[in-house]
Length: 407
Image (cartoon, rainbow, N blue to C red; front, side, top):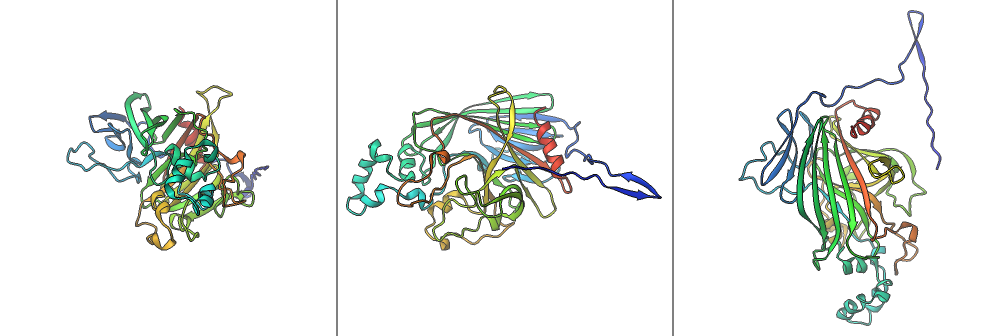
């Protein structure tokens, strides 16, 4: 794949004299650099404020991100928590969590158990599934169930500690935790997370995933799941499109800038719903409201060649819709999914550092090629950067904020 960019610098005449149009028009920052960033913490909430307005709220016990908003602007993640210290407030749901599972597809369910299931009772299949020689011939779904990565019962995040640090221009909230199987209680990964927000309201979420088992089962995905505010349903992205595509099914999808909505991207065209709607090789994706305000999402990874303290831009996978992953996984027909429209429901977004291929050569056995599998016994370190923007701010401004978020 080769890409190039052509830049033209035309001139116009005013009063008979040629005037060059400037190469770049600087835009004002979304937040005043002189804004005062502060943080407070109690037994329930850790709250970051900008000029006394709460812009980030994290649960002090679970380490979950509960709310994120743009100063004097729109709500981005979750609902507004203007006074999070109230003790009588009901527990707010997590709006950004690590994600390692996906709603199963027909190809994910294809394996030897489909053949043996016609002649053997169901209890014997569970016994055979424990034998590694047999397990490798079982479907990916069966393999995921065996190690605790079931999409029916996805693993949970357990927090060990939350550490808050404030320095000039930013606040860092570090969460040390584990990804634990709900089915057997085994610790699958150690998960180190950092929420770092600066005085311009740019949020960087860094994830470091460290495997705790010698697990050779391929992972469905490595990324985060977010719940965006229902007003941000206008989607624009730079990546492969316009239709869905996956790492092993994307050569027919051209790189470009595409627009869509959460309702359109989240409308399943499969009779049996499952994982769908992914876009690969995305430089960024943005979510806006009807007024043009919103948030842009980009990704960076640790540059091992330059040292772990250095980061470089990398492409991301993403999908968005109005139904949860659990709803897609449990539905057996499109009629099982409630009809939902833009603006009435929260937007469920997956931002993935790695996405396993979907296969398709044969749906009766595991058939994803090795190049498109994700090894479960390796470490992953990446950052998801959320840049709020106001109406009229262009991509150049947003990407400049991304670069400045390291400062």
